[in-house]
Length: 114
Length: 111
Image (cartoon, rainbow over all chains, first blue to last red; front, side, top):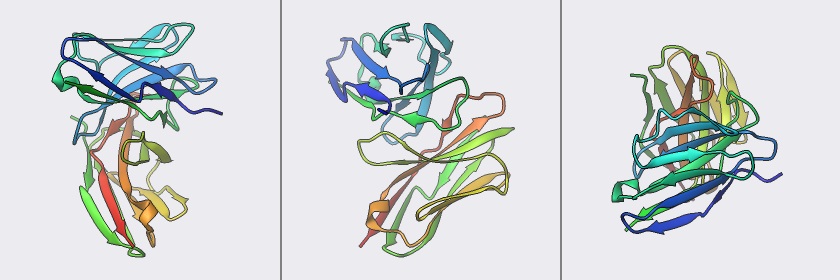
């Protein structure tokens, strides 16, 4: 049973470009959570999605960031016009339903903005 | 504002030297407390969830305990492979999906 799959594992973007991060949840899981880990900081909640719905995006920066979880395919975290401060590790977790008792994370995507 | 504080920031141990990590929180209404292990370049690996004061859980050389205001992760007779960053996260009663993480304790175990 595959775990949470994230790709790419590493992503390098120049300032101003777009970054797309993908997350495939564990089999049978329809709820996805994105977290960001800045250097020397703890993980911070960004957004919680259910299939085709954004449940809570209170941790997302108001501009340039968006997330989706379509009916088919992986969840996508999209960052437009990246800046150096967006450099971080982005992690995805999934659960079978609302409510987290054992949150399993993917290996993350490490975004570097040059 | 609700906060999660882990101490110490770093811990260097000799193999076999037992120690404890602390996670304190100022949450008004704790639903659950989670412990994770994170290796460099990897995602957090789930270890335990604790729900009520007095609860204890064990896994190999790790034992997690919970009180009303803090949790401890005890490492008994550690081995070099226990070297990692240990993360604590809390979940509020009012929110059954969001985890608030501490900054972590980096443990280094020397042979």
